[in-house]
Picture (cartoon, rainbow, N blue to C red):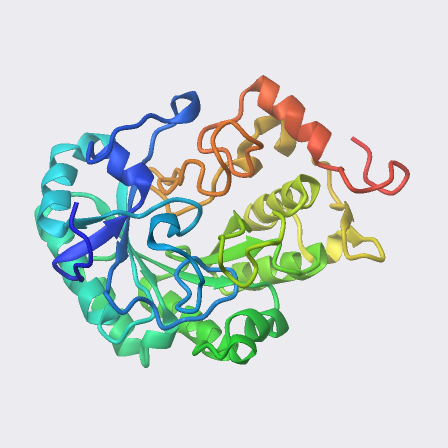
Length: 352
């Protein structure tokens, strides 16, 4: 492992990816397996963003030994070594995701690494971009020309007010809510419907109704919403907060599934005075029984199944699972059913 080395020659990779490539020793809880190789551009000066919940925020107060991002450490490796191992293990992987940080070189370096994977492997490639670094549609086209077939954008917050407070002027950060949504629109025009994803984090202060409305907005724009549960990063501005209640997350997961599947619209749903979902306006039993709404949502493989399954990216293995990186079994579904209406009085919510 090389420390303090920069992209595009070097890149960070998730601990799960390092284990999968046998760069690190380890195993996965319940024999989960990683299907998407997650890479993160690396710079000595770091990310210039100051997002209140992010492990990469340049104002985070943390020791180097405790430095994490999305709960785990991201070790740095030579891209040549990652490419060599990815090519060797292509039959175990379905996709690679190259993620930008907010840095002046990030767009150029993202294109270079994407191009290298395109020319040296047969893996599908996602570009997880920082819209602040993208000024026009031509730059989005360049990412596609470099070899990306899918593009992701981490909007994260459900409302413009929360975005400004946690990512923009509220933390003296560089990001703009309006610009992010413009890049989503442009990306769909370039990559096509269904090939652009939008990351949303549950638990940043939004109501369930607000998150449902934003999921619907993403879906209307012909992009695909992917859900994450907030996890407090030590030393970040929100590092002392708790994760969202599991009932809240389960209800949003089910709403996302039903909206993306075109089974409901928010207008059919009912919310209580606190903005919590109490009725979906349709029968939900069959969808819940499949377990599918509660699996990790991410960019697909060649067959349309989720490739980016990020095992235990939202929680520690063995603890409460927010996103299942595999299909829930019967016992899991039974537990999920007991969690779905937590936080509501029995007389309030939809009966089975």
